[in-house]
Image (tube, rainbow, N blue to C red; front, side, top):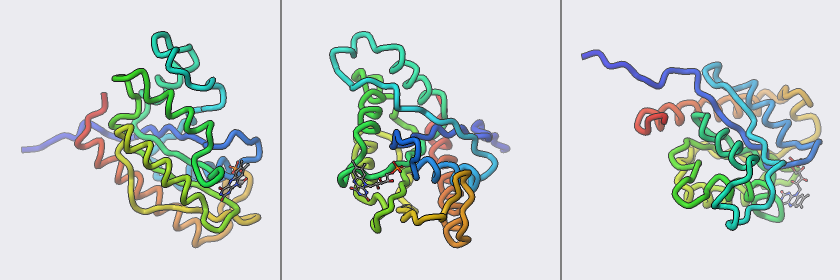
Length: 196
Ligand code: FNR
């Protein structure tokens, strides 16, 4: 019996940049990832900068900016988190965004969304602790995560140009593989968890 797979590409990926900086190396990394991703993936940034600080008093009537933010998450097939590490953890702006996404209770926008985590740092351990912390939050929020490969990008001057060209072929190949694996992961999750 022939079966049809109802989740045909393209797959939309909402990506979060954990940094608000205009000179963010993680934004530069995002440009490279988008260039190296399989053509079946389409990318849209889900911006976090305009969200106020989360306050559960507002659960009863979410502000429009937070409603729009949750609607943006709902509209995509998968989520990609590209984040720096701040003081060995997730930047507050990104954690704040995840808190908004997770509430009101029972209306968690992250549940069932295939997700991946990556980050760049000038430091040698390349955001490992921020990613670990972020993974804990995504687990609690019931977002299936790609657990391997991991990617801790040690950014050096000139490694990625401002428009996202990776100048080192080994790094480019590593990031290409990472995005191919993410594509496979999204496909696997969508096969068992239907799009809403
Ligand atoms: C940092 N940085 C940093 N780096 C790191 O590897 N581990 C860390 O814990 C921290 N902590 C930290 C805290 C704060 C408040 C700042 C501003 C910076 C350095 C950080 O990796 C570097 O500034 C990156 O350039 C930040 O990423 P974006 O903003 O360029 O994407």
